[in-house]
Amino acid sequence: MAAEDELLLPRLPELFETGKQLLDEVEVATEPAGSRIVQEKVFKGLDLLEKAAEMLSQLDLFSRNEDLEEIASTDLKYLLVPAFQGALTMKQVNPSKRLDHLQRAREHFMNYLTQCHCYHVAEFELPKTKNNSAENHTANSSMAYPSLVAMASQRQAKIERYKQKKELEHRLSAMKSAVESGQADDERVREYYHLHLQRWIDISLEEIESIDQEIKILRERDSSREASTSNSSRQERPPVKPFILTRNTAQAKVFGAGYPSLATMTVSDWYEQHRKYGALPDQGIAKATPEEFRKAAQQQEEQEEKEEEDDEQTLHRAREWDDWKDTHPRGYGNRQNMG
Image 1 (tube, rainbow, N blue to C red):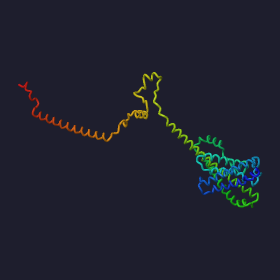
Image 2: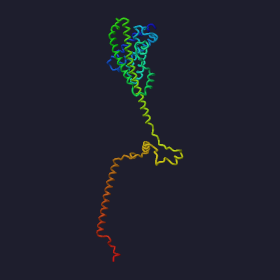
Image 3: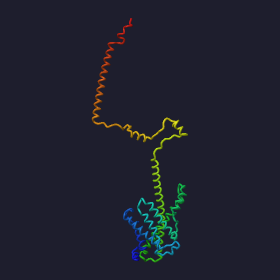
Image 4: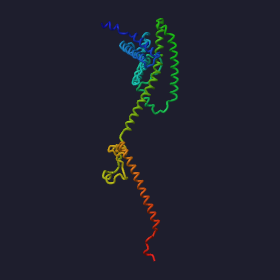
């Protein structure tokens, strides 16, 4: 029964070829990267390549103690498994887990580059690990601007990698049909897979550089969000109550603040207190009914009529007084002291 189960399990060549085919289909897909069809191929390819990596570890197919020439020509292609894993991991679409995907893809690419560096597949410089990059970041944090010489050398290295990549792709396309059809001899097969290893070295170096830049942007975004959150929480603290600086408590009780008044509450506290007791200008005023409006208007009319009548009586008394003064001049009737 165990033997039958082992026969039903996929073999290493099938896992590798199917995973490579799914990666090629994802890279040339016309559908959006986040579509269900593309993501299903990504997840399936990652699963197959993970099984292939476990099988390679169990078979102990590669050893750091041997040279590249000691590896069989047909087994060279299995060195590409970590690079394929990194490429498919980069195709995953999930904004909430983007940082995790970038870190996992960087580990896959670094594993591939480390293997190729140990086997001397090509001459290149390994990217810095996370610890080394962190140390370099702290050491170079005081530099305001990057070195122009370093920028020029990086640009030149990118140009050289691009030219080398195009040349490798041209040579691979010329040899592909012969190798896949089985017509190529062992030397041609070995050269074909060796060119594949060199091509994916250039791709891995570019991907790691892009990953490091994106990780830096994501971490700066997260730190800015944390800073804004802490600032908002700091602004929500209640206002501090005023206090007096004196030598002792007795002096504060005797002499007071040293100026006429001291605030004992904030404007919000004053407003809440007056609102609670209904002492605000817009509180305590009952809404008048139509009957009350009519009575108020009638009372106002009566008051106006009364004022008009009072005005007529006052005018009448003033006219009578004027008439009386006309007929009774000043000093009239005071004849007692006249000679």
